[in-house]
Length: 182
Image 1: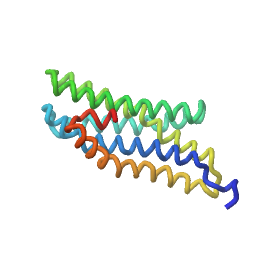
Image 2: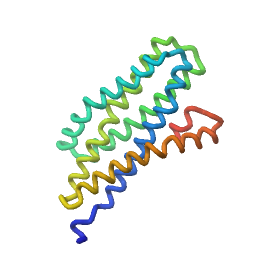
Image 3: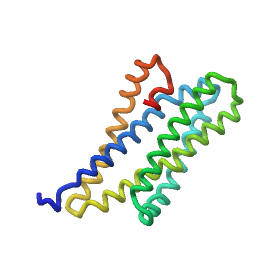
């Protein structure tokens, strides 16, 4: 393989970032629904909290892709990573506060939806900007490999997330906030 056709190493950085996003998503999906139900919400309400975020992700991903074409991949990518991190911390923090202090279910529901909306609105910037960067730094001979590495990073995170969360929870005495700030 000539140097021109070699897959760029920066794909590994993008893949690692997507691994973190995948780990965060799988962590949220396995850890949080039970905690939300324990606060008094039913399955429909829990599903609604997550579905609203997913809808925002669907509708805003194309927007972020177009914007990354105009103003640059790195800016949009970093906005997405930061937004995703803030949403995870905020979501877990709201749950922790609700466990310690009485909050009306209506207000808590709105707060949880808001935290997840940050995830859907800003976190959705990561994949389209990362995909755009892959297209920018690869040629036709290694583009598919680049996209495959990107997706493999995401899936690695999805697999690693629950294992890491189990370990962190074990070490932290089941502190629900710890997997989100570690």
